Length: 154
Image (cartoon, rainbow, N blue to C red; front, side, top):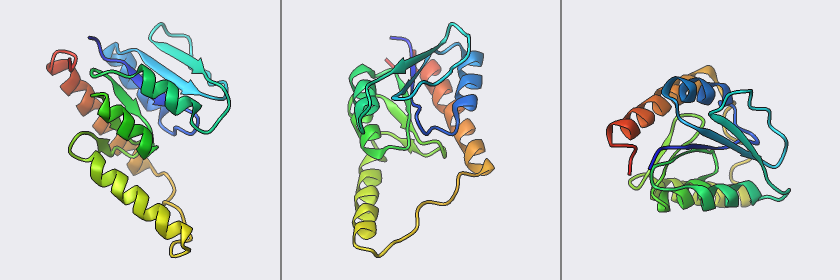
């Protein structure tokens, strides 16, 4: 089964990097959002507009993704759903979510949510930086290379 890249696109800061890698490697990309996202005029790029709602894009991606696919999201619960379907997920900062890392990522997310809700943490994550963009690009290249080498990860 060929690889497709699914992007949780509403707040994704690395859309240009995804397009660059996908075009070079001839991998289809589906940008999923609840706002209209312009993706350019290329046969490998597609935009899917879902209904408004906090989890509409997540639900669409989780239902569509399969074992050969790559998901780009900062949403740890969505990443967990996709990994459970056999996909790999990447955060925009290059963090890889797979079978070996998703459990810890979910636990950390839950811990941080609890600390924020309890007032122990008042700030958010650091701003997205050029280093994050570079780490993401390296990670996406690595995942795409592995997908290709493993026979489209099927």
